[in-house]
Image 1 (cartoon, each protein chain N blue to C red):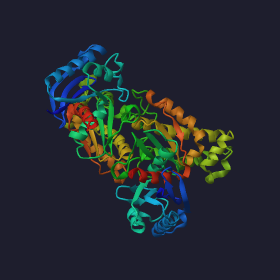
Image 2 (cartoon, rainbow over the protein chains, first blue to last red):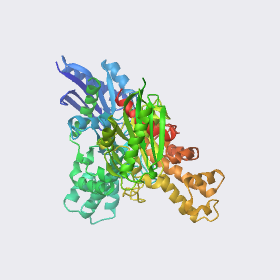
Image 3 (cartoon, each protein chain N blue to C red):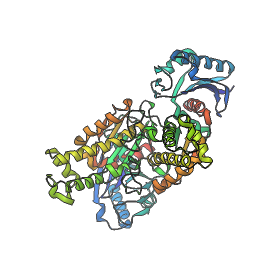
Image 4 (tube, helix red, strand yellow):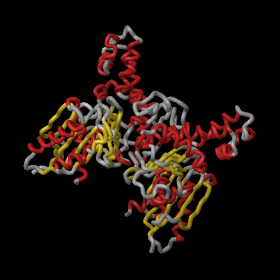
Length: 314
Length: 314
């Protein structure tokens, strides 16, 4: 009889469930588009239904508990999700209580970036180290921190909002209401917005015809084929990522920085610019810390949520 | 027979030693000006002599070990001090090995800001919490972090260089070689430099005659007596401190921020401006975190260095 954890990953666009074993292997994985579900109850009902479906397939196995990774902000201590920006009217959902009532299993809630950091630490690019900073660059810019072998949570589980570190005080307005946040400059959304603005002023660019449909992937593809403006945009983005990473090196002194999220698909194109900024901005003792691409892909959240439960039970 | 720890605190200007008990009480305290000692060997010899003097007075007591707090940068894992900017020719000193050889006791080395953070946590303004950020604002700007009940060290014990988080990327040149660091804007040195520059352009200020002898204390005193420029300088300094603290709230989610160092003597004058910036810049869930003045004074390093040893032996 193997010990398994039921893992759920509630993202802005996808809801995933699987049984995860201690080696990080996924079993009976299910996935659905979050956007296909209408309203808070439809989402929590589907989470319960998917959980039961996975649990049914695990009959006879020992289920240690349930680990939930979710977009946020969320309060992992109190067990509720404050909101998820891409899901309308999803506010203050006591997800831990809802799932515990329905499943009669102990439920642990974790911020998705922290869960992904744990996934990378136990089964990805962070294996074998005691300290790492995980940076996810997608719509927003978030992170998860593991220092000296401990996952950082802080008050209410709110640690790791690395995207809301100011890199240019009183600069660009951020979605959080403050100005000058790293996220306002270096998130995938910021990158795409900047690219569209700049391409609109450069009718000769190979991607000019894309207009407002221009995506981050388009810019990276154009840079690969030698488009000068696209390469410049990629270089600027790498530099903006590097600026924040220099601060993270000085703050946390990790052994590795691991980059995940949508923009990590173009990691090879961003890496030289990131390293150049670190070489220039970090104090000498921090310059040799490697920046690596995340290795767990879309399953980092499921694996990390499960590992959080295994770790608490070990 | 009480258990005691021999604590040493090597600062840029003062060298202190004492026996510390588990309650954080200091016994047989000794202190000397570091600047009165000429050369690396004179300093380490004096550290040994002061240690022996304190130990002699503790005859019959159980000495658990030696805790050393030191200015840095230093490598607390390897046990050596890289350099101390105010002490000429003090480079790569293997202080742990030197003291262990001389005293035949186990020696633990800790960065002075981390030691002070531990002191505040166990016996000062941070008692009873699991997560705090300690910020020390003096010549430089440093910090120590305690999150979820753990002291953060990171690779080589280098975590907590909070003064070298960029707040205005590519801004003012910092002593570390990078540009835009928080320290370059908000350290005590930066405050005094800015004050001298601004006062030089304001011949009517009540502190104009001070010229290049103008100190931080002069500016705070003038602000208290209603000097407009001095008040403006204090407000700007508080805002610059607040900018960095907003980032620290988002990064670490502490229950408290504790401010020590020379500028904390004017904490009451800085606190309103710091809180105003936090109110404006922090996300709602972080705004109620209190910012407190450090409570251990000059002994935070000695107490923290000792508590590090007690904690490792408990």
